Image 1 (cartoon, chains in turn yellow, red):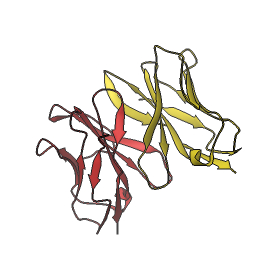
Image 2 (cartoon, rainbow over the protein chains, first blue to last red):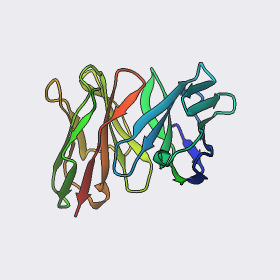
Image 3 (tube, rainbow over the protein chains, first blue to last red):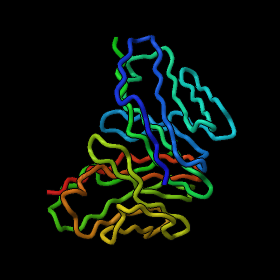
Length: 113
Length: 111
């Protein structure tokens, strides 16, 4: 099955700096890669996703890049703010054959004011 | 904006007891899922459900687990005889296709 590795496990950044989280996946059939933000005790909230037919997607301060050849994808947060502090999970799936999400282990991001 | 809802938010039970966790998926969604998250660990897939049947299940989803869509709105996860290691946060999710939206979770504590 799919194995998603995520690094780093913790990330501390100064407010205003950028944060980058990297994930690798093992199954070349995976073609959908969402990122979820989870605040303490809350539900995982979808923040951005990318499909394998594009290499990059941006939404305001958040961007995701995908390298299909190397089987890795990354989340970039620019101009970080204290409210960006949370656990971020990457995930992968291979719709329409397989919708189940395989998650990375998560990155705890702390933005220092 | 519609959201997935789950009840109860917290369930405490004794080992060996049966529990039912309830979910109301987003109304026009066709695919339903259960995931669990043991404290401090990654979210793990349990089961997916489509067209009134299980479409896929993980090795965690053994004979003690079952799912049901008893009516047009609810989606339930039953654990027949709970074990200590079933203690976790259980998330329901739903989707029309690939994008899944998660509920707030039910924290299950087995004593």
